[in-house]
Image (cartoon, one colour):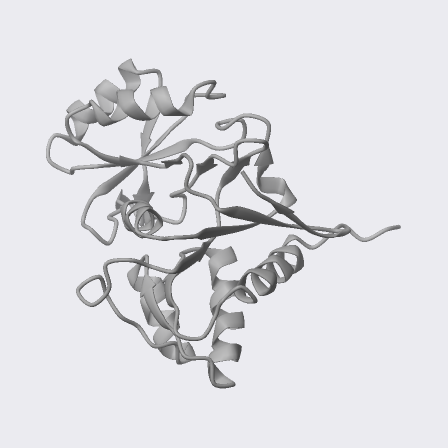
Length: 230
């Protein structure tokens, strides 16, 4: 019997390939989640060999891991632009390279970092590829806790079937102190239009739709790596 492909190994290969793009002196955006963790570990190996970089983490979890691995950190107080960000995604739409992100809980910070980045390399395994966003995963939406019930009702009116994300029996809080709502819209034919509609709802802070942000996507597959560009 043939062994099933290991998605972790595919992510690890994709992460190593992405980290090869890092150059000495860069300011880096450091992603959040299992795939981004592989990139951090690969980056730490290069830092240990003398690579000089500074990272802006997208979450406190990433910041803590970077410190343990010896990756120097900085902030937007010192740098207004990021040379390169390496991060994962929950879904990648074939062709457009539009993304759904935020399942890892760092949605708003990931969006801020992505928008401040000159380049965003996304690393995934083949299971994250879809023909249309929303095909496999719900869309995370970050909302203000005050009036969350009202905001969720409006998200439901928009067709999202919202579910408040919980952690240990209480609402999950992002690093910014906000709630995350996972909205199942089904397949999303026009992500840009949906993004605009959701941002028009009072109480919505940010959505997990990352449109036109990816500079390239590195896909780890059982047969090797594939690199896609918009």
